[in-house]
Amino acid sequence: MAQFGTVFGDYFAIARYADGTWQQPEITRVAPIPLHPAAHVFHYASTCFEGFKAYRWEDGKARIFRLHDHVARMQKSAASLCMPIPDADLLANMVIDVVAKNIQDIPAPPSSLYLRPTLIGTLENIGAAASPSTEAILFVLTSPVDDYFEGGARPLKLLIEDQKARTTEQLGSTKTGGNYAAALGPTLDAKEKYGADQVLFCPGGDVQETGAANFMLISDEEILTKALDTSFLHGMTRDSILRLGENLGYKVSERNFTVDELLEAVTTHEAALSGTAASLAPVGRLVHKGKEISVMDGKPGPNAERLRTALQNIQCGAAPDTHNWLTEVA
Ligand SMILES: *Cc1c(COP(=O)(O)O)cnc(C)c1O
Image (cartoon, rainbow, N blue to C red; front, top):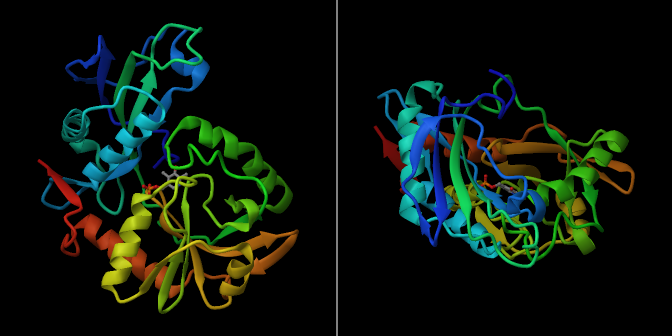
């Protein structure tokens, strides 16, 4: 299949917000959305999005992973940006309808249909720098995607950035475009200077996350990851892995830890990035103050593999959905 995110399902769902209310959503063929050049989003970055997946099982029906949790997260993102908040039922039904409409385009598991709800402020007013957009468009785009691990995972190399933050404390847990723009420069620099795949942002030594994935350390006994606060994105994959880890008997430690602790831990712990796109991707090397450090033996470890498989088995129907994470779409 083509590169992640470059191929789209034929249909998308779209709804408009005007006069204080959400209008009836439509499902139509994917097409450009005409926008006035003064639209609020172009000037003042009123935008947020979600990313999650639907899987088509052998029975021909699709299952959406953690739909209602993603809808709730999008509502929180919208609220933090003072944007019109999509009604939970409206957004959930748009997602369900668009999955049903594109169901034939969903590749067999572990491939899936990636779902991308997006909210943009469309008020036509370039003087609205300090006032919210009272008009908006909400759409749900889809993209068939391959399993990230097809053909074997290459362990990732992360540059440890112990000064700069990924974004602001205020918007760290908001899935909004500007955060990715902020992380882009440092990430490109890390690629060019060190051949790093991603930057692990650890402002003031506090280990947070990379540009678009959460970070965890995993030993035979323990899963260690930063405790929830507003500085980083609360990943649904992170939460799912922690819950499954508990079920498998790991001690789950959600607490803050420093770069010094991290550098010590990688002799006993595997490291991994969690997120919808890559599930749980192994980290093989770290770069710190110009020096390369191997994580364990630098190869993908058995614990991350075990947790990832547990997650994937639920998503693909090979294990029971004991946490009620799946929404069925016929
Ligand atoms: C989306 C995202 C994640 C992962 O969230 P999931 O719900 O697991 O997909 C982590 N960090 C950032 C910055 C993100 O944008």
